[in-house]
Image (cartoon, rainbow, N blue to C red; front, side, top):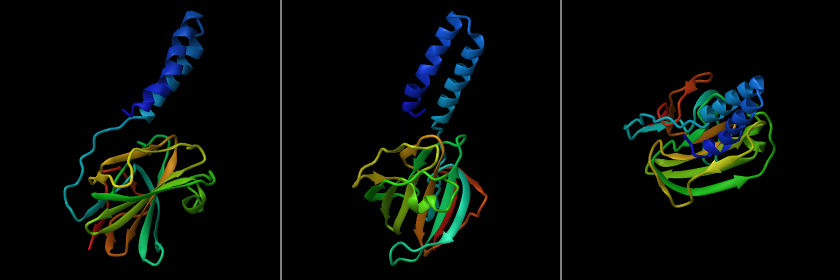
Amino acid sequence: MVKDGYKFAAPPLLCVLLALFFHWYWLGGVLLVLGAFVLYFFRDPQRTIPTDPDVIVSPADGHIIEVVEEALGAIPGQRISIFLSIFDVHVNRSPVAGRISAIEYRKGRFYAAMRGRASAENEQNIIHVSSDRGEVVFKQIAGWIARRIICWKSVGDSVTRGDRVGMIRFGSRVDVWMPDKVEILVRRGQHVAGGSSILARWR
C-alpha cells in the first residue's frame, strides 16, 4: 500500500461513522465503498522481477495502446505507450537497471490518456535511465482524470530493474522509449504488469 492511500481513504471512512450515528445507512454504504476503492487504488503489490540482464520490463500496469517507431532527437528508436485505467496498479517502476541521468517535468494539457496527442501535449514527467546497454526513457503522463504525478527518485539515483520510482493518481498513461537495438516482444492490446512483464530484449 502506498502511504498516501491512507490519507485519501481516511476522510470517507471516518464519515462512515458519522453517517451511521445519524442513521444515514445509505450514505454510510456509499462512503464505505468509496473509502475501500481508494485503498484498492493505492495498492502496491510485490512483483517477481525478471533476472535476465537482457530484458526491459514494463514501467506500468495497463494495456498497450501503441507500439511505434519514434526517434529521440537524432537517435532512432521505438516507443511503447501503456494506458492505465483507474482499476490498474498506478505505481511506476524502472524498466532497466542503471542511473537516473535526467528528470524533466513539463506542464501541459489534460487530454484523455488514450488519445495519441496526450503523449506529446499532456503534463508529464520524463525520466532518463542510463544503463550499461544504452539509455531508456519513460514518461509519467497525466490524463483527463489524473492530475498528480509523483516521482520518488532524483537525478543521480541508482535504480534496479523493476525498482519503484513513483506513481500517477487516478488514471493515466506511461510511455517508454528504447533505442532501435532492442527487439520488441509485446503487441498492441496486450495487458502488462509493471516490473514483471517483459516489453523488449536488448539485441
